[in-house]
Picture (cartoon, rainbow, N blue to C red):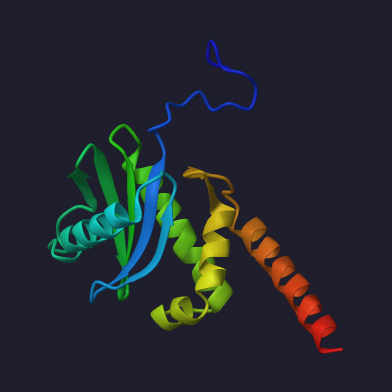
Length: 167
C-alpha cells in the first residue's frame, strides 16, 4: 500500500481515471455516453459536441490521442463508430486504447460482429457490458470470458423473469 492509504484504496488521485466514455457515429450522433465524473446536463451536451467534432474531423493518419482542456482524449474508430474516452493527462494512453479494444471485442463476441444497429436497439446491453468492464472510471475486469459469462448469466435471469411474467 502507498503510505497513508487503506486496504482497498487505489492510492490514485480523484482525477486519475476515465472521465467519460462515448460512442459516436461518423455522422456525429452519440450512441452511448457513460459519465464517471459529475457534470451538468448542459455541460455534457457541450462536451459531447466539442469532443465529437475534434475526433470526427481529425485525419485518420494522425495518432489517436488529443490534448483537450486539462484532459487527454483517447479514441479509436471501428467501422462507423468512434469510441472516445477522456482521461487525465497522466494516464497511460496505450492502456486506455486497450480498454477500448477490449470493450469492442466483448461487444463483437456478444453480438456476433457488432454493428451500429445492434447498439441502437440493444443499448442497455452495451451499457451493461461497459459496466462489467469499468466501475467508477477504472478498469474492473480484464477477462473477456468472465464478462461474457456474466452477461450470459444476466440474459438467463432476464429470460426466467420474462417466462414467469407470461405464466
